[in-house]
Image (cartoon, rainbow, N blue to C red; front, side, top):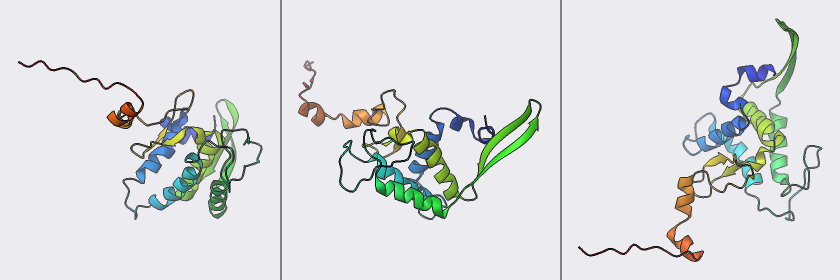
Length: 193
């Protein structure tokens, strides 16, 4: 395990921790004022994520380019939108991150540690996006709840969770929707006293 994981909080080290961190910062946009130091950084990240997650599951769409690098397969559910690719690459070019590899002598012998040194909030945000969203196919799991508009991580096996919580599901599954779906509406008969 590299040096990066030794200095990162425990919640980021588990399987979905990095995506939860991204979702938390994106949800911060709902409460931060526009003068907050992180607001503009994560607003740019949200535009990239929205360009990907809000796409319909259709493989053919005008104006969409397919990312052809080796880690992306055009056989995925839908192609990576060109807008997201250009936005991320443009921000990454303006905010390069210093990657490091260090060799240290420890009690176990000589160990190699890989790390990075972000100098700004934008660099950190881009690193999280690159590492947890693009590298680990996080784009399949980071979603926006259509009911409350909060970002959440879909931790289900089939990656088909539609809303962030049972509360939002119940709010969505309203009386009108149940009726439209053909469900019988149960009305309790009240006995008069």
